Length: 183
Length: 393
Image (cartoon, rainbow over all chains, first blue to last red; front, side, top):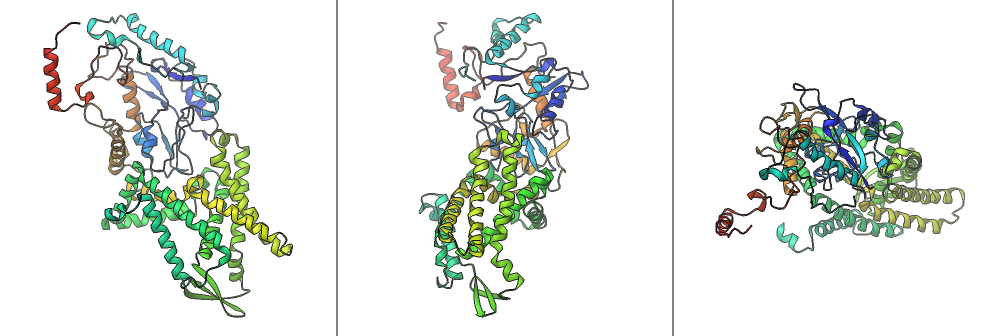
């Protein structure tokens, strides 16, 4: 898998097409695994999409007492294996981003697996393929780096100028230290 | 206990040793000093001992995991807490009935899957019970008179039964019944695994299909033995009994290390109502952010302890942990942080934040003092050095 998911929260228009698409994905039992939520409903109608970060060392797997959460060769963190999951919900509390969901009826945890059946063949996940405002994108690594740089240029567009004391705040993340360019 | 442990190579080998010792002792008692050993089952006996060793090792390693040991030790503590006796008994009983015997949660995932699983599991449990019972001599049948058998359990004579009664026939054919159940279940499971696209996405041959094939081989060879001696005058019986033995040995060797290991870990499900969520969908601990109940104190304490034991640090600047917030609040915290919108303390007019704080951009930027993990004395020393350092940059 040479592509990556790229989220831009500000671009979300709150149409929830990604959630509808997620429900349609195979093996999801018509339950969405991603989130679209309000940043602050009393302030504005701004929403943000939220997916699993597919951590390299996932806290959800670390706190699972049954060792049920597995990671594929491509680095996708899968939902808990149904035969192992004992339904304790530790993963939902361990996850720093609040991603895993729990189905009390059938006693299993389910989480975003980046539509593993699609992404393992470099097809965009359901949510990214339907997002009308490109808040969720499934793009090449190089394209992502370009977008990242443009994102820092946005500061200049908005009239925020770097000064001697804070110029490093304006440099894109991973500047000069990113080594894992194969992914 | 610590001294005893020192005389073994590892904890795992100690527990395996005691498992073997216990089995050997139970054999000694139930076969009245090895008088009633069924020598035809010798191969099964040896492989069962190896099975016990494998299971001992695998269970030890599983319990050695930080998360498992934390959950298991809390549950054992609660089990022996007299004040929680009622709750513990109730949760164990309910888990046993709903989760293990009736397997209701699998039926809720689908009737087909429920039937398939209950067939395999109960067929296997019946077969395992009969096989281990006979190989270790835990029970045997003594002929009292030509029409009556007596069931001897652990060398204690119990009930008698007519040699051709209904109960006796059921007992004789217990393995056949178990095998037919497993065979039906395995065929259903194989059909599902081979045709259902959703399952095929994440399944792996060696993990999901292989155990089914092994079980199928065991049941097929076992049932052929019955067919051989009832309909075919014992044709190929000797060779097939050897083949059956080989398949059973493979299955017993595979059991602790493959998918079938989910059987011995399932009882941990009792820990959920016992120490965590007593009533389904009823939470007691309130979220630090929004005040909504989302969990309970014991579970959050456990999660934080497990994370700490594995050096995963989710402590926020104000001393709270991320797991003190409900999932919704945690998602919001991430978004606010990423968009540099952490009102009211954050700076909404600052640059759009592209740093996650893990990778520091630039070369001249110093991390906070705590990052370097120096003690107080060393920190002061280094400060002095910095002060006297000649400035040449």
